[in-house]
Picture 1: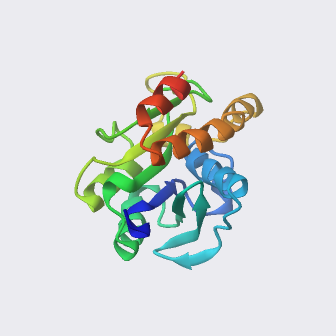
Picture 2: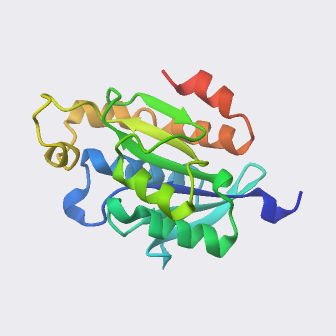
Amino acid sequence: MTMADDLWLVAGLGNPEPKYDGTRHNAGFAALDALAQAWNIPVAKAKFQGLWGQGSVGAHRVVLLKPLTYMNLSGASVAAAAGFFKIPAAHVIVLCDDITQAPGKLRIRPSGSAGGHNGLKSIIAALGGENFARIRIGVGAKPAPDYDLADWVLGRLPAEDKKAIEARHGDIAAAAQLVMDGRLAEAQNRYNR
């Protein structure tokens, strides 16, 4: 196995403007910031319509990416970075919010549909398939079926929910490392709860 075979792309999804900080839709950005800190990989270089940084995690070389394209166009940034570094979809891990899970609940999957998530939809289209891992971060469901989805995901997280999500950042880092180690099922057993 060459070093190039062991290069991974971890992308955290969100919206770039400061007004979106702390919103449900930016749970992926917040998680990526936590990973960058835990792994000591600054995400400060501008390219691929995003901010990125590169470093090592265990035996793996990792590119961390925050697409600055806005959520619905995340795929343009992810595909540009994956293409530049020749990273196959199977070595891409996406961190994103999930309104079907309670705040702080994680759902790790090896692949699958977008499940109504526009960021995932964009990445699936740009990479040409669903074959990439995702760590979906619960942000809680809409309070009522007729509540506007955009208002909900662009709404700020209440302090309690924010705390529940931040408490899982260490687990997200550990899960991402297990995925890179080829132990996705173990990550699911340990952290999908």
